[in-house]
Length: 270
Image (cartoon, rainbow, N blue to C red; front, top):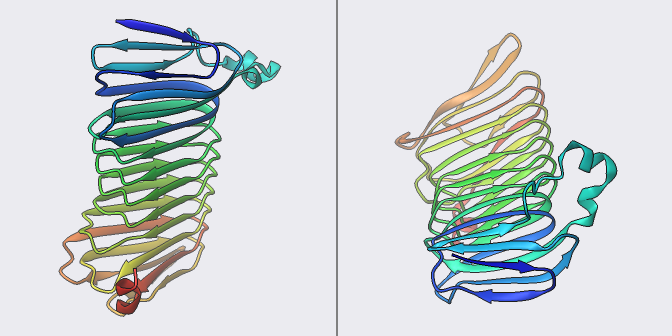
C-alpha cells in the first residue's frame, strides 16, 4: 500500500486502478474513463491536505477522518476552509464512488457502476454505460448518453437526461424533470415529482406502456394512441405505444406533465 499527503497542486500516476473512492469538501471532482495510465491531478487546494491511498487496485482520495465537517462545521463555517479541484483519469471499467460536499461532479466514459453524491453541486454524466446513481440536494443533474440504468434523486435540483436508454428512476420534490429519450430500447422509466414539472420527449416509433398523472397539475400528450381519464382529484393519460414492451410512468402532485413527440425529420438531423 502506498500513501501520499498532498498539500499543494500535484500530479500522481498509478499502475492499476479498478475501484475509486473520493471524499472532498468544496471545489470540483472530474473523473474520465479512457485507455491512458491512471492519474490524479490536484490543480487547486486550500485548507487541510488531501490524503491519497493506493492499495492494490483501489484508490482513495479524501481527508483524514472525520472528513465531514459535521453540524458545528456548518455553523462555524469550517467547510469554507476546504477547497479541492481534483481531476482523475481511470480505466473505463473502474468502479467510481464519489461523495462530496458543495462540490460539482463530472463523470464520463465509464462502463462500470458510478455513484455520485453531492449537496449543492452540479452532477454531469456523459457517455456512461454502467449503472449510475446520482443524488444531490439543490444541485442539478445533467446526463447525456447514459446507456446504463440511471437512478437520480434531488430535492430542489433539476434533472435533465438526453439520449438515454435502459431503466430510469428519477425523484424530486420541487425540481423539474426533462427527459429526451433516443431510439434505444427503454425498459422502464419511472419519474416522480411533488411540485416540479415533468417533460418527456419520445421518438415517434416508441414501444411503451404509458401512464401520466397529476393530482392538480395539467397532463398533456402529443400521441393520439394515448387516452385521457378523468377522476376526482386525479388527472391521468394512459395507453400503449407500439408493442408496449417498455414502461413509462410519470406522476406529480401539483406539477404539470407533458409528453412530446420527436418528428422523424428531427431524428434524422440529430
